[in-house]
Amino acid sequence: MAPLLLTRALRQKLAKLIRMLSSDVDGEALAAARAIVRDLKKVGLDIHDLADFVVDPAREAYRAPVYSPRAPSAEVRPQNEYVARNQLLVACSLCLQNIDKLTPQELTFIRIFEAHLVEQRPFGEVEAERLREISSRFEWNTA
Image (spheres, rainbow, N blue to C red):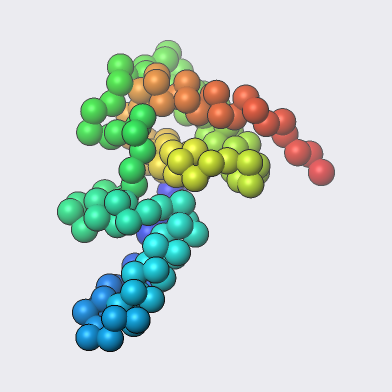
């Protein structure tokens, strides 16, 4: 199953915090805003991702400058696409083993790209190459 960036529990928590933004008490409203940003940051997202989710809840919320499912780069159609997808999923796994060494943007990109691979969505060579570049920094931890 694809990793969900905005889980049901997180969406419920964010809904509660968004309602708190209407408080007449400035401190409560500000605390709610800060909590929203903090909770989104924990899963590699930001307030722009939340706005994207509000506009199109059917799509997973994200903001990734290189990767966009609306305008994929040239389609990758290797002879054995199954093997290519599995290799890219292995690269995603390697990156996620080294999550502490990823930037927030890289982490968001990898989670989204992994979801697209698992869901058999099309991907472009630019995105595949970006994943290869990120994963090339790491070695497998066999311990």
